[in-house]
Structures are given as C-alpha cells and as structure tokens.
Image (cartoon, rainbow, N blue to C red):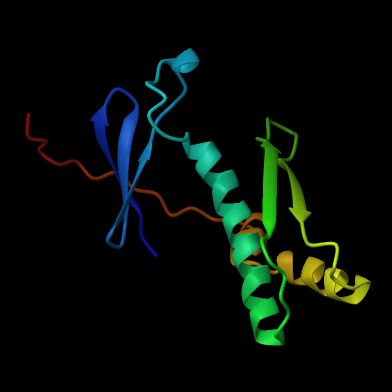
Length: 134
C-alpha cells in the first residue's frame, strides 16, 4: 500500500492513494486553513471506518442484518512515556442478540487498522533530494 502527500498551500496537502485524493490540513489555531481533516484526524477516521466495515462484512457473511452501524473514535496522541489512547464506541441495533454483539465486538478488534495500531511498528525512513519546480 502506498500514499503520497504533496503540498498545495500552507499546511494543506493532497494525499493520493491509488486513484483517490484526500485533502489534509491543520486547524486554523495551529496555522492551517482547516480545509480538511488533520493527519491525526485521518488516523482516527481510518480506525472508525475499518472497524465499521469489518463488522459489516462479517455480518453480511453470516446473513445478519445489522442495519446502520456507527463507530466513533476519539484518541489522545501519546506523549513521551505515555501511550496513545483510543476510545472506540460502536453503536449497533438493539435488535441484535447478546451473542451477535459479543461476536461483532471480537471481530471489530481484528480489523486491519486496529491490529496495526496495537502491534509493533517499525519505520524504514530515508530522504531523497530532488529538484523541485517553482
């Protein structure tokens, strides 16, 4: 998987993923134009979307009608010596049985973004110098 961010103006960037484009920016109180979610907000959005889709895919395979699932993610980025904390609230229809809710809860924690965030992360970073057009 690959994502490429290119600066538009100020802190606003266009992030390209396959044939898709997403605008990311910073809020005005930190000098951005607030023309898109911040990179950290996109991280929360990635987790919320992944949890929702993972549960919906599982329910579809089981033939369960779970209607409109809503997943809310709040998080506090980690500071030196403190872990990043995610709060995930999943809203499911009250018509589901306890067993269905329990199973969906287990499945939600197995979504790829959740697993990535809870696992060990390694970076292979390098800087390449290029001639930038004005």
